[in-house]
Length: 392
Ligand code: EPS
Image (cartoon, rainbow, N blue to C red; front, side, top):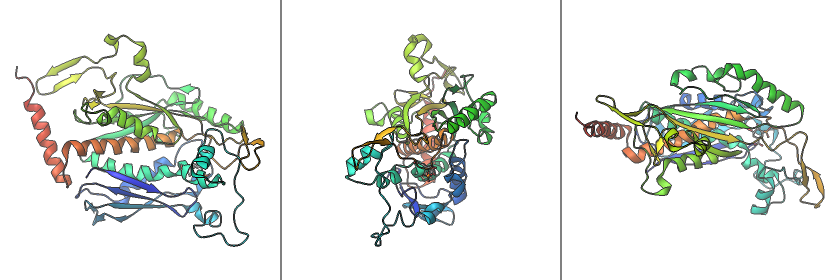
């Protein structure tokens, strides 16, 4: 079985949950492997008051015994500390007399509020926004941490950094290596460009003052992948599409690029394609990586580089015009406590989504019910690749 997961939970309900199926047996896994990533997702300049309430930690409730996966579904829980303040509003049982929360009826432009109420036939926007909330991404980061643990067994490393907040962009420089990311978690905006950090925090502070919100761009970089993950054989197997879909499933993501992405469309082929070289002992390699580590929907063995564009968060403290769905009258959109900018957090979610998709691709390539089975076929695959090299 390949890696599959489902999550549940409302932002202000009692807890978030995930069930992860298809993780091979024998993988060392503990909550410490998950909690580090959960904590990184909570960071970032521009977050709202909620992150001061929560300290996200995972509880593993099934599928792991004595620190090792069993090959059975893994259950995860993350408690919502804020639940204690929402017990009446988010009660699962019937509302006691006179205790039903006033419905929210003015949707925020750009949020799932209106389409969600229409789709599910709900009269109260709260019934939509609680699940549409980016709080759900905490569970995806937890699932991603399991995928990352699996990839780690094969020397695969996944990092992220922010390349734009609003108008402030980081100029692209030389190709990055894992050591470049050593201090990125220490940056309040997860940037590698120390000289842009202040400009980034300044635009977020200014947006907060103006009742605005800001988006941006983050990049995920993956090192240590073998060539041959994904496939050109059928469209849905192409790794570019799978990674794009995974990243686009993060709330507020409106665009994804692989490698040079949109910039490649403006250049002639000779300046886009990475020339191929060969050295005995080293194998095939490219000196450039415009392709971002993917050719024909398959990994080349070069670092995988993907970027995602996040739109500004729809909750504005100086709200846009909207319509009250109860009266049909024009009204200012609803205001909720919210983040001003969550691009640094989205970057951590991006790492998780990429990890999940890559773990799937690894499992497709290598199969196996246990991590030892996977390692056996991994070594056999590397041997086969080496044996296929030209003998000068
Ligand atoms: C969110 C609104 C804010 C964010 C939240 C996403 O929460 P609250 O409504 O409780 O203030 O902080 O993000 C998280 C809770 C989280 O864990 O990332 C929204 O409306 O999407």
